[in-house]
Structures are given as structure tokens and as C-alpha cells.
Image (cartoon, rainbow, N blue to C red):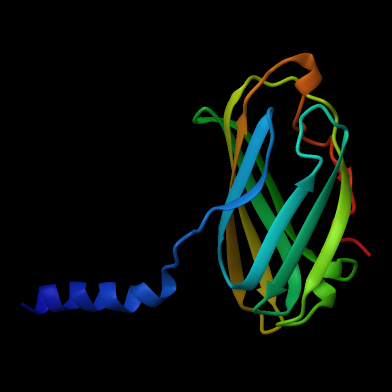
Amino acid sequence: MLQHLSVFLCYVLALPSMSSEEKHWVCSSESVSIWYSYNGPLYYMSVAISPCSLGMTVYNITTTVIPMFTITRIGFHALIYYEDQLWLDHMQQDIPCEDLKLCDIIKGETLHETVPVYLRKYYGPKGEYRIYVDVNIVDDAENILTLRFNVTMQIKSTSSQNSFFLTAGSCRTSPILN
């Protein structure tokens, strides 16, 4: 009886920390569909990409974020899978926030930004690409927070006119730099 009670209490106490990950569409076109979900301490987040087509070297990514914390350091770990096979594993250690716009906002403030992202063309096969990103954030009270993002890209065509994606080191951007 005591064992069942402890299992029940663990389940009930864990419920408030669980959250459903609602899917959010980023864009959809003849060549690609992209959607994401996230889980973590944010009041609000949205992402949009234009143009929503493959074969471009410049994409404008618009983000709106309202955090539940003030950021002092940030890092991430990204995994990319193609058809359930690991394609890329990249980790960025925590870096101080002196030059990041994301760190200029405090708890509850809104950051709305459109940033150009320059990509080198890569001719990848059609299919499903899953991107998992864990963003590790240290807040002003030295608490370690994790935001988990799951992005799915469904590539619908593979002609050379529909090249996409980036390889490690080919992205030059200043998405959150001052």
C-alpha cells in the first residue's frame, strides 16, 4: 500500500512540470513544410521564415520571445536526424551574454526580431528531417533552465533548384547579436 501511495504521489507531483508540446507551423510550400514545438519556461514564442522555399541562400527568420527569466549565459546542443539516422551533432558551450540582444531583455519583456540567415546550398534528399535543440540558459539567480525545441522539416522535392540546409560552419548570421 505504501509503495502504491509513493508512486501515486510522484505522478501527481510531476504533473505540473509536464507540458504538452503543441505544434506550430512555420511555413509550408510546394517544396517544404516546417513546424516546431517547444517546451520550457517561456511566456510566448513564435517563429516565421521567409521565403518558404528551398534553394535560397538568404532566409529571413522572425522570432518573438517573451521569457520567464533574465538570461546571463546561454548555450545549446543540436541534433539533426534524416529519416531517423543521426546527421549532425553540435554543441555550443555556455557563453556570457554581454553582446546578445536576447540577454538585454528581462523577465516578461518582448524580443521581436527579424534576422537574415545566410546558408550555403546543400543538395539533400527529400524526406523528413528532425532537429532537436536543447538551449541551456543560466538566469540572473544562477538557475540552469532548459528550453527544448523540436523542429520537423518535410522536404517534398529534390531537384538542384530546391537545395537547402546548411553544413557545419556554413551559416553566418547575427540573429541575437547587437
